[in-house]
Length: 197
Image (cartoon, rainbow, N blue to C red; front, side):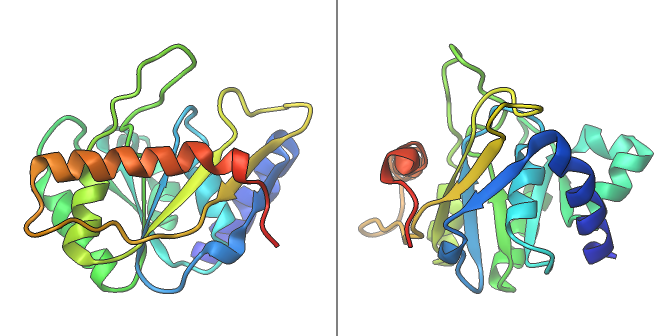
């Protein structure tokens, strides 16, 4: 079902977004946390499409989206699971840990919500906590910000080099915040690094 859903969405969306995927050779095998900037609802779908038509990831989506029947089917077909934003969702954390330990990739936008031009970004430390607890790498990804539909030059999903965040001793809240800041710094520096051969 996933492969069918993937290609239906790919074919329907490409004329609208004319997306391009860069540095996909950085996508590692096994578990990893994919962290990116977030400025539009379509961002998560673009990252999924960039990963290819083989199901290898889990993704979070706000639980309200699962109340729309067609969207619920699409989200489940794409492997998304519901989370309660702003709450300590233990079920989502356990699901995330299980997915990472099973070798799946977890797609997370640390900013938690769409951050548009002029807004102040306040990244959450969940991705840092999961990475440090499971020992999986962070795979940063930069997505063309702002409006993406019918752009003159389309939009681009660019992966950065994966890395393993490390701290000394038992992680503290300050450690989680520092790792989160490092994640977002690596995401935002991707455009300056260019495409790697």
